[in-house]
Length: 537
Picture 1: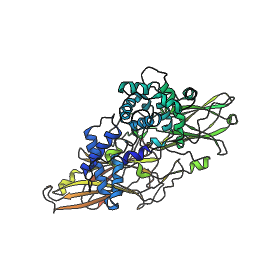
Picture 2: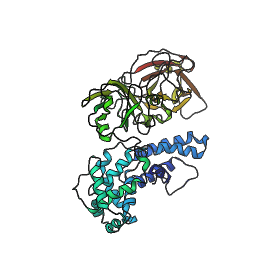
Picture 3: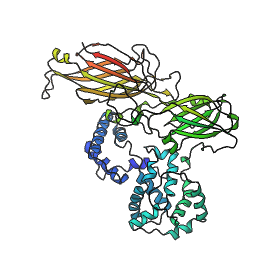
Picture 4: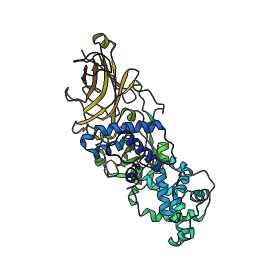
């Protein structure tokens, strides 16, 4: 089975090759990639320009690691969110299931099918790693059994596959088709007439053969069927705030749409001894509803059970409560990127990792127990807004501009579930070019939680700026570099809580030294902690 993600970038290079990549090289590379891998989509010129510029900046920053490493780092920026292709998926199924369709005609049919099957794709939360998730197999099965889609596409494009040849290769096609069709998952179907035809039967029959190529796509624990004389439980996620996008540094700071998206969710039910009773993976429709009802063994009736929910993270290896609560997340870099990236969408593929738990006594047999679980993100949000105080111009004749902001001494890991923070080595570092707007410099980071820390050991923010003595861009010999630094006070004494929101308002008043005045209010993500800092003498 071809790896769609790996093949995507491997084939992204345009016909032109350059010894030294520049911004134009990345731009042409992205444009070629979109033409080949996403032909149904229309991409705005500004998006291509913005991505290629950000990719080249990333490439330049990583050159000291070697050209190959720099290109790989740039690729993460250039192709983020584009590695999974609907068109590639459909084309792969056509190639596998309908080899009689002429090779030179498959792109035309695949393009038509991709458009016809748009309602099916919309039922899934697609992302860069989607081909590696269990839902990928489910999607392929749905695409194969979409009634009449392949025939419609072939008819509209003038392609006539040799169905008789295909039928001779698959014995008992009709029986296999009926069996699979009877058990297929229900999702939104394409809006066209149902056509029970030979191509449908062949596609369904071929699904069984195709499964042997991607066995690893299936979940490790199947969805539990209903049990007679069993207790049932309904898991419901707490209501999220509105989807309205807020201005950066907003004091209300309710979670943005991309900060609360769900691409996967698993619920683990444990008995009072910490033994796993059942693991339930939410389906796409259950994710949309943020609720699922499933059966528990009869033995769970009347007993207190603990329910652990994990979103956007594969925790399937855990078979006991102690194993689950000991799991660590170790990739803070997945959340951080350029300001433009992290302020508009989730940088981490699959979304923010979230978790929550609730202990509750299960009701009697043949009753349903409702369990409400609130999910919290494993990371905290740190927003920095830097302004140049008006008094600066009264002290100095020139001007000052912020170049970059460096976050350092941050945690390298976090427990999946809340507990005593285990930050690991406090060595995570990320440098970001701030976004400039209305005379302010904005930066945004996501960090793992830490406990209380002594001064000198806390998460550090360093603001690098350039002072221009005469304020003129035509002269450079009067410029000097200035660095301002401040530690995060967090909730108190440097403590950073998961799902916490920390606003740092930095006010530059001078060139040397620093005077800090700090005001802190404790809050969750939706009600931020504010830290005000005056920088300079």
